[in-house]
Image (tube, rainbow, N blue to C red; front, side, top):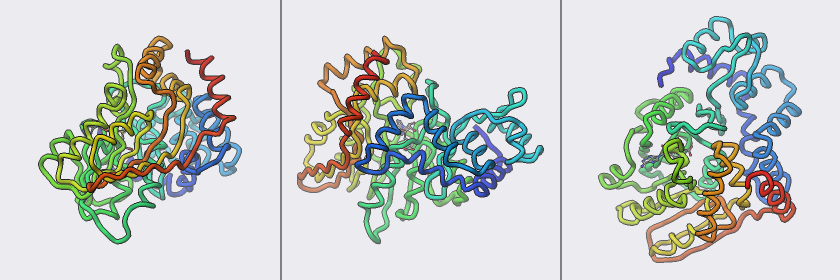
Length: 378
Ligand SMILES: C[S@@+](CC[C@H](N)C(=O)[O-])C[C@H]1O[C@@H](n2cnc3c(N)ncnc32)[C@H](O)[C@@H]1O
C-alpha cells in the first residue's frame, strides 16, 4: 500500500484545521470509570453498528466542516462532492482519489479508512467494521485504554529500550516514543508496516526515531534484550472452519489465548524485564499468569457480557449464527461466561499477583444486554 506525500499533507491540513482531535472523546468513551452512561453508549454503538455514535456526533457538532470530516474519516460514511468542497479543492480531491484514500461513486465520496485521533496525533487505520479480510490493520478502544493506563503506571524519568509487539498502524509505538531511549515496532503483516510508516509521516516523526520491522516478534525477542515489551496482541477466538478469512489482528488462536500465552512464555524465557499487555478475554488469563514466578499487576478495566462479545462477532466480523454458535460452545467448554478488558503489567521478580477491579458492568446494563443479545445472536 503506497500513499504519496501530497495526500498525507492534504489529509493533515484538513485534520488540523477542523479540530478533528476532539473526536477522540467519541472513540474514547469507554475510558471513564464507573459510569452507566458510558456502558450504555458502548452497548448502543455495537447494537446499532455505530449509528448511535454518529447521532451523538451530529447532535454535539455545530461546525459543518468538522461534521463532514467526522462523517468521512471517523464514521466511514458517504459525503456528497458538494460537502467535500468544504474540505478539499478539486485538485486536492483528485490527489486523494488517485491514491485511493477516498473513493468516488457518482456524486459522492467515501473513505476506505478511518482516522483515529489520540492526543493531537492521527492514526490511519482500516475500516474494519463488517469485514473479514485477513490483512486488515486495526487500532481500537482497547489500544486507547492501554495508552491511558500505561501513562499512570510508567515510570517517572526512566527511558527504556522498548519493543512494540504487533504494532499494527503504530499507534502504541508512536505514543510511547517519548518514554523510549530506543523503540522497535514490529508486525508480521506487511500492510500494517505500510500503515505504521504512513502514520510516522502523518505525525511528522523522523524515520530514524522508531525502528519499524516486518517480522515475527519471536525473532527479535531471542536476538535482542528489551527493557520493556508492550503489546495489544490478537486475542479473539474464532471457529475453526472460518480461519482463512479471520483478520490476523484479531486471531488469538485456540480459545483466543494461544498467542498471548506464547508471548508471556517467550517473555519469561527472554532477558527482558517488563511486559505490558492489554487483552479482552475471559478469566482464564489469570490461570495462565499464575503459572509463572513473576510480579503481576492486573487491572480489570471493563467487564463485558458474553452476549456483547457475540454481537462484536456478528457486527464487526460478520460471523454467521452457526459460526457464533461454535464460538459459544468453545466458551462453554472452557467455562467462560463473562469477559473483561485487562491491562496487565508483568515484572520479573518474585511471585506476587495483585488484581485491581476498576470497573464493573452495571446490573441494569447486564440485564438489558443479556436479554437483547441472547435473542438477537443465538
Ligand atoms: C490487535 S492488533 C494491535 C495493533 C496495535 N498494536 C494497536 O493496538 O493499535 C495485533 C497486531 O499483532 C500483529 N501480529 C500477529 N502475530 C504477530 C507476530 N507473530 N509477530 C508480530 N506481530 C504479530 C497483527 O498483524 C496485528 O497488527
